[in-house]
Length: 141
Image 1: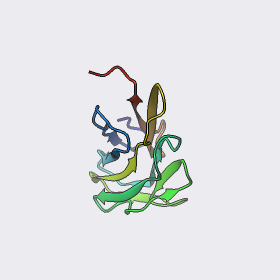
Image 2: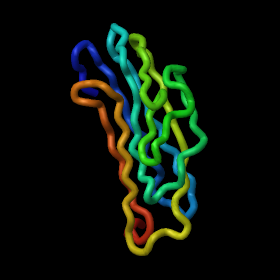
Image 3: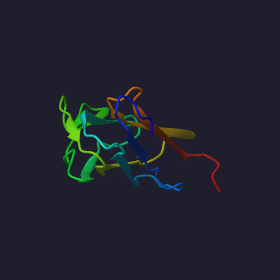
């Protein structure tokens, strides 16, 4: 959470569970909150998903009613509310957007890390969070 120019937007990303099997469905949830007493204009969410190791995202959901359900997808980046749009996030507003994607079946040989970065923009600097997890021969017990 980094307040800037009367923008006090917070966000976080939920990490998928640790043990996974080939073909498992992974759900990503991006939560947001305007901690300010003022509305913030021009807000959008981006999620740079790992298109090399995840299926095309599906099953989009949202809470809070600010960003809509289905984002723009350019094949590697999801953007809410759409390709070029933004929203005005009222003071103290909060909610989440989420989606699902499937892991590869079979897993690639060895250990493979799945990386994902989500940002709430535009803030200065942007509020971003990255999650990463391993599939395959990762050494988890």
